[in-house]
Image 1 (cartoon, helix red, strand yellow):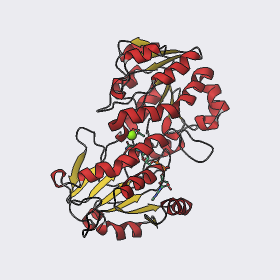
Image 2: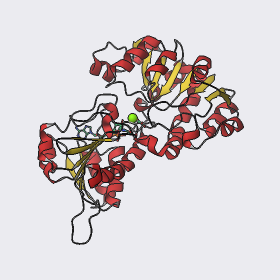
Image 3: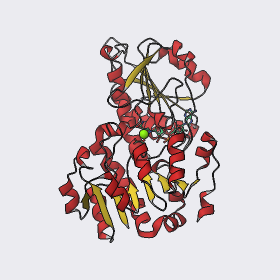
Image 4: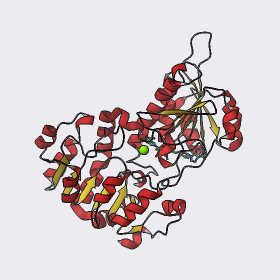
Length: 370
Ligand SMILES: NC(=O)C1=CN([C@@H]2O[C@H](COP(=O)(O)OP(=O)(O)OC[C@H]3O[C@@H](n4cnc5c(N)ncnc54)[C@H](O)[C@@H]3O)[C@@H](O)[C@H]2O)C=CC1
Ligand SMILES: CC(=O)C(=O)O
Ligand SMILES: [Mg+2]
């Protein structure tokens, strides 16, 4: 199969979909890997690194899209990229369709087979292709949130760890999954007072065990959120209902409960965000203020640390990319129900229930296509 890897074009996105190591594995199995010149530069991989791995360098995204049987990317295809997709082509990347009707309609119209990293599952109830990026975004959340707390950025001027005689920042993390646990690890490490909220008691029990008293866990409901907001300096949004639009857990009205200059970091923004006042921002212009509360809502946080993120993502996606290339999408998905769970669009049809429900579009069961 011809595997194509174009340069990412989303604002400030420096990751790349195929690493030289992944290219080398694919070439060793008899596939051709076509990489747009410069695609890896932001992550520290030169064209020569790809050539040494056996890949072929092409001059433009159009050449890659035209030649490839499967496009492997990082971010959801932007409008111009969507126009280059064609019937029968496989697209393997993050999609986040539930909050994005324009993209969903374009992918359906393209006729391509679109497999979303974020809905591929594993045998343990996890999302193994989302997880590495959630590890990164979770670790970044308190780091960028603490920057937003600084006065120059509109924040209240509270230092995460405090100093002797002055209390540290109070940080609430709503959603204690992969993002939440990673955020808790860094926030605790910075010396903040951390509370994690989740709707899963077994998950809270796990976090209680591993953090051994260094954070507080609380069941997540409206009352708990309202009780916490007046005390919090930072709230991290880290919830997920796989494939679905994020539930709104803090309303605009509730912002008035918070201290001026407090910070909301909405990591769940790629699924539409879990605060009513969230709107996606970019690394170039990451924060804005609503009613005196600083919002940080960057939808591709891992792009900020593109080297680490690219390698972590590539490690997770490579086996699936190879299965798709070796077997074609149909046999690969028939052999692996967890990969089939990633199928969101095929040949003009939506194949993911939560996206259909979020956008009011008819969908078909992916199993019916095998
Ligand atoms: N902005 C960015 O750059 C990135 C965003 N993300 C996003 O971060 C979000 C979280 O991802 P993961 O941690 O990997 O998901 P996960 O599935 O590991 O964890 C989500 C947690 O949310 C909990 N939850 C669901 N509804 C809840 C509610 N109403 N209140 C409290 N908890 C609730 C679940 O029980 C689960 O423990 C996703 O939307 C993901 O796409 C992930 C990576 C990068
Ligand atoms: C998960 C995601 O959207 C990202 O890594 O950008
Ligand atoms: Mg994202």
